[in-house]
Image (cartoon, rainbow over all chains, first blue to last red; front, side, top):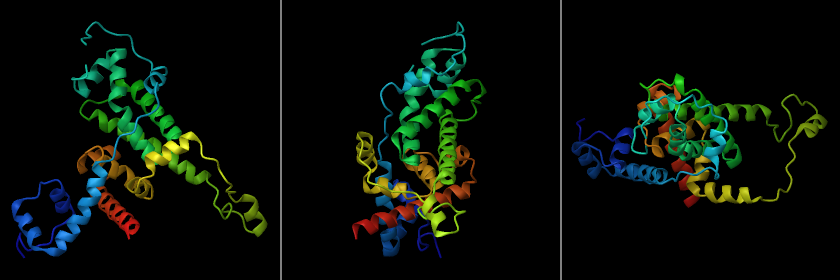
Length: 80
Length: 194
């Protein structure tokens, strides 16, 4: 078994989905229908996951937090 | 201040600058709230847990060790808050078949959870809209420990090593959780399409 004949591992499929798979392993992918099917399925899920949005808490969240934070006395070294 | 690194902002916060605390909240309120919301799947509760997380982190800012990423520290505390909540909820939840100690049909009926028609509040509608997509529903069916790993990996873009450090898990466990989670997600999503 050589670098171009071994099936891709899950880690390698993730690298491929990110466009980071080394050329020798990409060559295997182009020649192996089993790996291509598996990689395409995995890529669909990864794409859905990376597109998930961040949600925002309700307005005034920072004020509610800060109302309960004890800020120590400022020193003179502050630079904004 | 928005161009400063987290470490610099934390250093300013340690010196007692209110604006630095607010900057840390501004940077992390969405990522922390999103992680918690997807963990507990209840907006109001996620907000309470997010608030608890920030208060704990900001009041304990002097104990923060700069050799670790600030984001890892805050996600660790948020994740622990979610996991603690989910464990408590599991203990408190009555089964549809009644309490585990119930032995007779009468005891089972008396202790069982009663499901009735529930009107949908505006908050429920928001939750349905936000968490109602196929991928969000599939995430909601994952075990909580898989859920936090998959969120940190693909929503926050953490490496496996950073997730292991953040969640105090062995690297191999993190890899296993993420691979299994993606496999389960694929299964759920493909079942829906069939």
